[in-house]
Length: 131
Image (cartoon, rainbow, N blue to C red; front, side):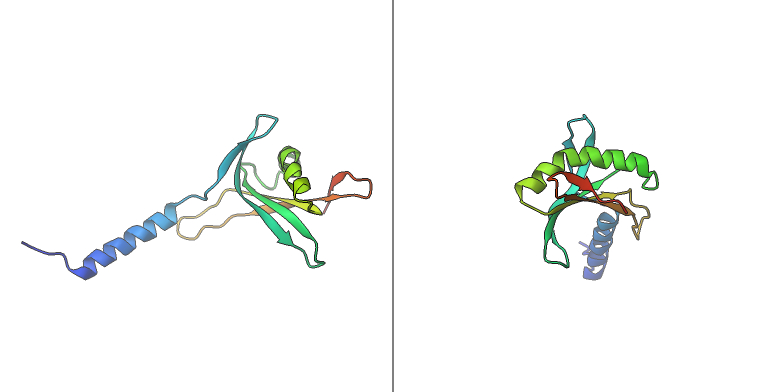
């Protein structure tokens, strides 16, 4: 009976692990918005700003071209209609929505993102800060 050499087995396992790591997609949760549009949520969590205040940040994957700012802004407004409740429930001073475009590349993955910041004004209403 013939046995495999340990070096061949470990090389094969290393190659398989590398292949799986390179082809895996980001983990996300699909959430349906009141408009009926579905978004892929990557994650959500608090962030601290330099002035000591905190905000809640939501990261999501979009299929839109990030250079199409009017379409992206409309999609983010739709996301904000739901995300705002999480920001208010946590008593955060701001909400940040980060739209992530599709990743490109096989071995080295690259992508773009665009952030939208909402802040509560003196009038008690939430406003998107313009860049």
